[in-house]
Image (cartoon, rainbow, N blue to C red; front, side, top):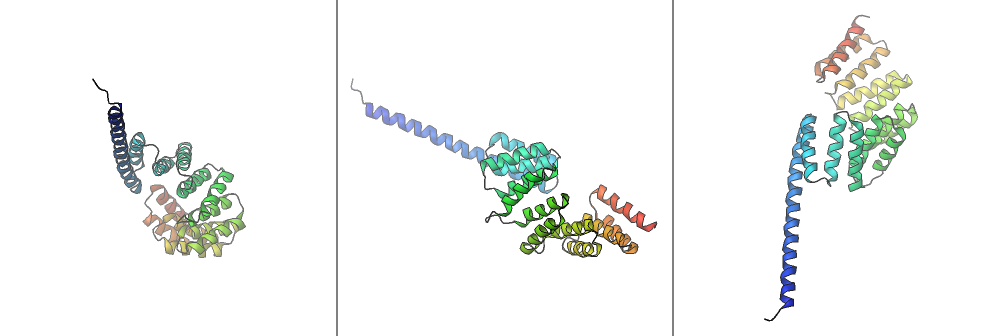
Length: 255
């Protein structure tokens, strides 16, 4: 019987090729399934349902763990649940998979900020703000302002907040931050101006109203402070913030 080694080799190569194609197709299907699960988790995150979001993200990770966007999502979910160590771990995984992913780097900086690891937070925010392809550099700039505010370096805090405003004039968090800095400096009129601008740009954010009320209180404008605290209580969604606003209103009412 004649042997045809060339044909046998060709059959073997075709078999291996088909197996590789099948494996590749299976990976694509798994990746798509993981992305669909991740999308569902992101929808839950948007609704503030962090436990459900985390559950979906963990399902997605069990299918396709090498997704930098998923790892960033996991970091945000853990951060929302108050587990900063796991948040940091997943942000770092995200950046290991995609070193130029600035949203994850900014989020990592925020986690370090919560841990009061100021130097690590500053490093993350500075790298993120210098990324020319990052669409929202005012986020890390504002975060830098907050870090320096927490460190008591008010001039540097104002510098970064104002730089953020130059890039995003309608970003209320920067104005809110400036108000906090002026409050710490005892410049209450400047604080009121900054808080009022923040309120104008974010009329449903009760915490800004509370800080505005406190600034009026420091200026002995008790009627105005009472009005602002009452308005904060009316729009507050978080029960803790609502209670704080009501307590502040009661304090100035009883003066």
